[in-house]
Amino acid sequence: MASIWGVAVILGPILLLAVAIYVWARNRQAGPRSVEQSERGARELREDLEERQDRTIDL
Image 1 (cartoon, rainbow, N blue to C red):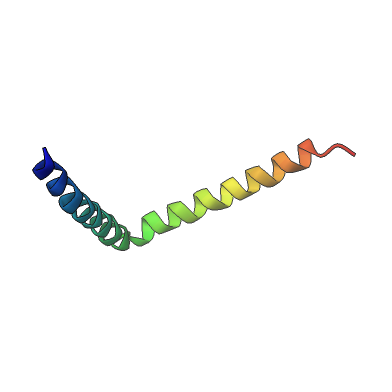
Image 2: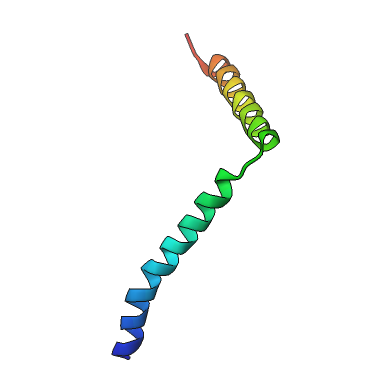
């Protein structure tokens, strides 16, 4: 039982770090089209939040 915990404690963080590096590298390869889509989505979200805030203000 102790050997299983030893393997889990050692391999767990290594596996987590490997996945984080893989995701980081994959996101760096984003093309201009996906960046444009992300920017457009963020802009639409900000506009929607501003509209919602204007409608919920009680004076």
